[in-house]
Amino acid sequence: MVTKKKSSAAASASEAKRPGIHELWTDRLGAWSIRALQVLLLLTLVSVIVFALTQIKLVVIPVLIALIFAAAASPIVVWMRRRGVGRALSTWIALLGGIALFGGLVTAVVFAVEDQWSELSDSAVEGFEQLKNFALDGPFPIDQTALDDAWNAVIDFVTSATFGLGAIQGVSAAAQVVTGILLGLVILFFFLKDGDRIWEFFLRPMSGERLARGHRIGHTAVRTLGGYVRGTATVAAVDALGIGIGLAILQVPLALPLSVIVFLGAFIPLVGATVAGILAAVVALVTNGWVVALIVLGIVVLVNQLEGNFLQPVVMAQSLSIHPLVILVALTAGTILGGIVGAVLAVPIAAVGWSILKTWNEKGHKPDLDPAPEKAKKK
Image: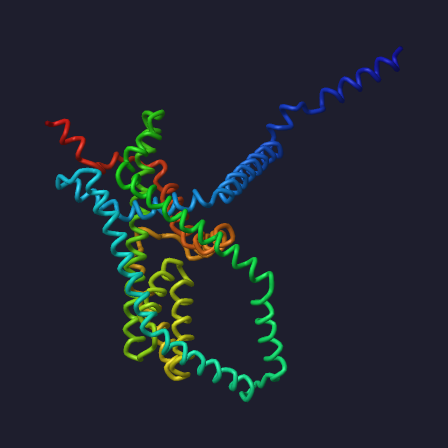
């Protein structure tokens, strides 16, 4: 009997020492485990959202592009509204003005390419022959058989069924691009016309501090996106103007189209303008020779250094105050998820996200984006 009592007492003592479920989850290890589980759930949720968005890129990309352009054009629309121009009329003026500017630029590029195409094609043939001779007779000669095999491989690929399938897929992609452009224009019109009302609609369920935070986030996003686009356009225009003047002085063919490519490439930070400048140097190499190509490359390096060290810190200080490493990571992720369009959109999205985090708990006021309703109330 004594032995049984001792064993039961020992068992009860061991059970008393054994921690319960509540203690297991509330000690230090349990707290870290709960935090790790929360992080895993958050990463899973983000991954699912990103995957879902990539499946409907035809809708998501036009919405994002329209949002960025609307933020960039919002000061013009607000300026017209404050001078008595109605919502619809100010929106049409801004939208049609942008389309006319873009259409005029595309028309100028097309005419420039058409006028210089024959000269460029002849120079290109001659330049490729020079490159071929240099490859055969240069300091690191390449066997003629290897060049012939490479050329035959290119011909076989172009004439193969794979290339034809790729061409069909290209036509399908072009149709998607046209659809995305039309959808983006419609969305842009409504963002310009009723962007503040749309945001107010999403904020209706909120009140108090949440409502104030919603207004603060909307104002921060519009200010950051608009400042980014306007600042990048300024920097890109300086790059295109400097490199374009250099190409025109050196009489490199397609100076205007190459300047436009430099302008568009500048919207991809860190690498866009440099890659576009290297393309201009390659065209100069093919058409004008080594000396002119080296001069063009020097102009590209000089313009990029002046822009990166003097202009960009002043123009982009407020709209893109994030570390270059963050920009690089955002570029890589955007390129993987959305290609070139993803690379263009990744950096402004990252800038907006960082700006929202910085102003999350700050005290702010609702911006007066449209004074027309106040005027109507006074009347």
